[in-house]
Structure formats: C-alpha cells, structure tokens
View 1 (cartoon, rainbow, N blue to C red):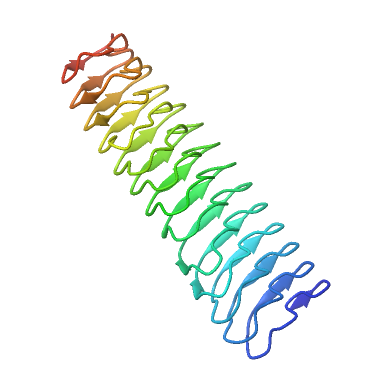
View 2 (cartoon, rainbow, N blue to C red; view 1 turned 135 degrees about the vertical axis):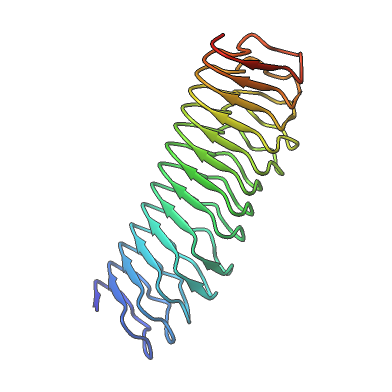
Length: 239
C-alpha cells in the first residue's frame, strides 16, 4: 500500500509494506518486507532488504543503503542519522530521539530529545524528557527520568543506572562508571570521576560537584547531602 506523492516510488519485488506520505520509502526497491512508513520522507533513504521496520513522523528513520531489521522510530526526525549503518532492534520514540545516532546499536530512547546527541554509544536505555541528551559514545547505561544524566557528554561512561528527576544530572567525566543513582536529584555529581557509588533517596549525595568519588554509599533521603570531597563513606538513613 502506497499513498502520497512519490511514496514507495521504487518498490518492485517487495511485499507487505505500508507507505504513506510524500516521498516516504521512495528509494527502496527490492527485498523490503512488512515495513510501515508513515509521514513525509519517513524512511526516505531505506534501500534494499529492510524488514519489519516502523517509522512514523516526518523524516523519521530516513536511514540509507544498509540492512535494517525491526527498528522503531516514532517522532519528527527520530533515528534519522543512521545513513549506511545497519541497525537491528533500535527504538527511538519522541521528537528527535536518537537523531544523531550513526553506528551505535541496540539503543532504546523514549522521550523528547532522549539520547539526542548519541552517535556511537551502544546498549543504552534512556526514558524521559531530555534523558541522556548529551551523551555521544557512552554504553550500557540505564537512565530514566526528567533530564537524568543530562550533562553526560564525555565519552566512555558505562554501566550506570540513574533513575529519577535529575538523577546524575551534572555528571560529566569519562571515568564515571558503575554507579547506581535512584531518587530526586540523587548523585547529581559534576565534572569529576564518580566510580561505583550508590545514592538512593531524595537529594542523596547530591553536592559532590567537581570532587571525585569512589565507592561512596548514601541510602536515605538527604543522606550525605552535604558531602563534597570526602570519598568512600557509607551513610544509611534519613539525613
């Protein structure tokens, strides 16, 4: 099914595709199966052997000449920078979610500008308004919440979990790995390494700023909230 000016223009030996919108999936020719492309220029550069992909929104998943399987892009310019890089199972839902992604694989970004700057980072999950918005080459992070991990533009941050409003919001150092930050403004951090820390609770360990932290544990509302340079402490309980 093709509806719209130049929609599915080149499709020949392909089947089960639904294409709606001006120039949507207009470059694809053969071997394309069961794709859904809805919106102006949705999947416009998808070529051959693309299967089971869904793109809804103007310029969503514009893609290129590469094998793409089972990807979902919903929103204006969501997942629109992959060009000739192959992707399988990548999910971008939201206005310009994963818009800069090139070769980074198996990422999930849900929310306005979620993972907006990520290019080569892999296996991240970011859910929330501007969640992990500035990360480019960070991998295996789980970020959930309004602007959680939003400042993390330094490459190489791996295996962090940040859940909550502004959780880990100011962390921006390549050696910030393996942290668990849960709660409103928990583990806010800054431009210093944070390694293997745990901050759980409203405002827990949220004042370290540019001071490095390793192995610090703060569990409870406002636990270690005034901690700046002291590292390796353990505090459990309210304040």
